[in-house]
Length: 125
Image (cartoon, rainbow, N blue to C red):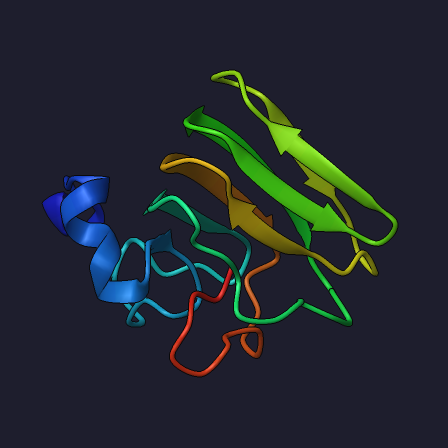
């Protein structure tokens, strides 16, 4: 059943959906389409930041640092990920933003996969 198999490379596939490899935004029938979860692999240049805060969050998210130094802004607190494997998890109702203190690669998993969080012309993380 090869139609239910996809082999790719996150660096090559990611730019098509701003780093998102799996989620509701992939075409129906594509094995990468999911309403349950979203997965993103993203290389952020130093100084990259989210254009605006995510507010009214209705998902749970896990962000894992692969390389670099990456800051996640949460209400009343900043979390700096600086060692490979450092991660942060936040849940429903927790607004957030982010900033790449150094060139960074991060893996983000969020669930469920629901539309409505993309900033026009910017990264939807």
